[in-house]
Image (tube, rainbow, N blue to C red; front, side):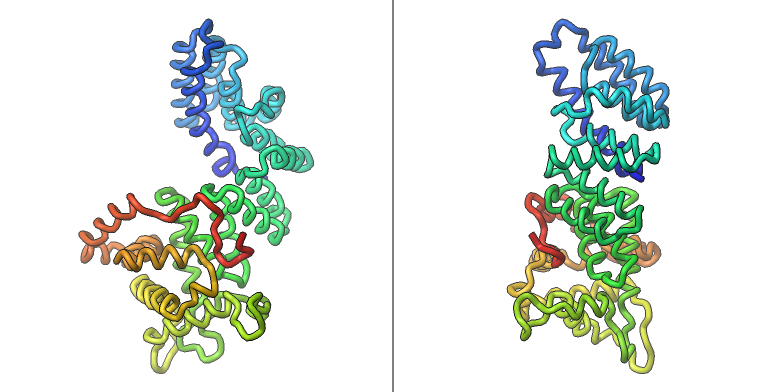
Length: 373
């Protein structure tokens, strides 16, 4: 079943831009009272932000009295109806306009959401799939279909829909988020590492940012048992490691090369007569730093395309990699992060300014080593 925080609420802020711009540029609406409608729409938005859906619905009705039949307002009223758990009423109101091109993929998504909340998976899936046919580049609809498979326990199909979602709409964070979380439930944690880091570069300051930062730190600690003579590096299942490299039998596959080079970078952190079952943020930052330098010095970037590792190289070349890695894992251990900030606050602040002006590019699909486009 779709989750409101991932499905409905993110649509509203984008739709408000459409509402405001449309009021300014559509001459045919001049005979209506757009200014009064705009005031009521502003009140409705405030009620929605305050989680007061019934008040929002009343305000949208007032706005619609000044702009009858105005699609963006009707859509927003339907969002408010869903917030109020009045799903059947939302469906009746939304159904005549859900395919309006001004709503793009969001009309289909909200129709599916309504049916999901009503436990009607058959109809919700129908609308999501109809939407994908109309808008094949909709990452949101790929997310919704993937989530249905995930709820059904079909993780492979869920992951594939989410992966395709990152390809058709690379700037949408949600598909990366769920891929990172989903792969923590498998033995192929390597994909959590890459999709989680990609997510953090898109969505830098939300509750989900804190969630994934901590998740990544714990994933690295789950995967490292430094000093263990049997299995010290464990990011990949045996099945994944056994998949032949597409470059030929004499070449390591990307997962094998990744684990091999992590093992080399981890050598200074192996204790003499014991097993290190947990690394600190500082150790992990140093390990990742050593890995990045060695990976590119050995020319592995020419053999294995990976946009996260290329981004790490950019950070390394700009002298920002270590600060970036502290930012990346900072929520994994807040006390350690606070100690680091107390001793290196000026340098970290300089990085944050630089990071605010620079970042990964998501204009095209990323190659992260898993079914690269």
